[in-house]
Length: 182
Image 1 (cartoon, rainbow, N blue to C red):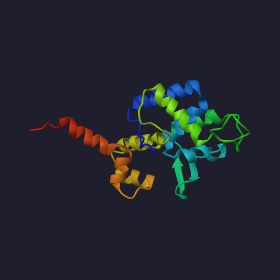
Image 2: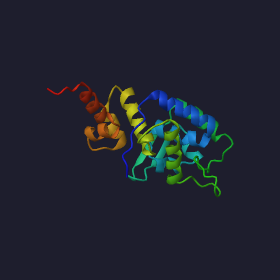
Image 3: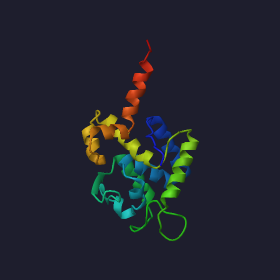
Image 4: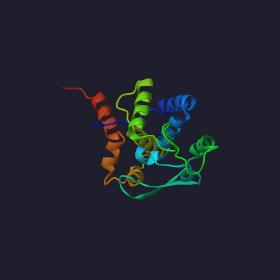
């Protein structure tokens, strides 16, 4: 399994959102749910319309088995409302074109994200990049509150969280840029 990175540039995230919204609403919604909620792709794919009509998304995480409650942001609320217009409560949000009311699979989600990465010349991007992008953005918007992010992700230490969202690598890169051998 390859290590994937967050998308650290907010302008690139905004450009990807605009591109997907223009070209494929379903893929846009998948991307937006990932970068705005921090949910794993397996949890995003099992969401139905009824799961996103309140103020929060409540899921039982597939990986941990823990219940998670996530506030739906103002931007996400607006996009969800538009996206689900005309859909039934039982319908999957990220629906496959094959069969009746089936979500796309993880492999298809990966192909979609890899295509976006190619379109934007991004390296080291996969489905988990959406969750990491959420974490990276949250970290910077929360005045670098690693404790809150650690709790959100369920990590055992701040160091793990910082490595997970690429902050540790940023610090190392910054030091190496200033390094001069004697």
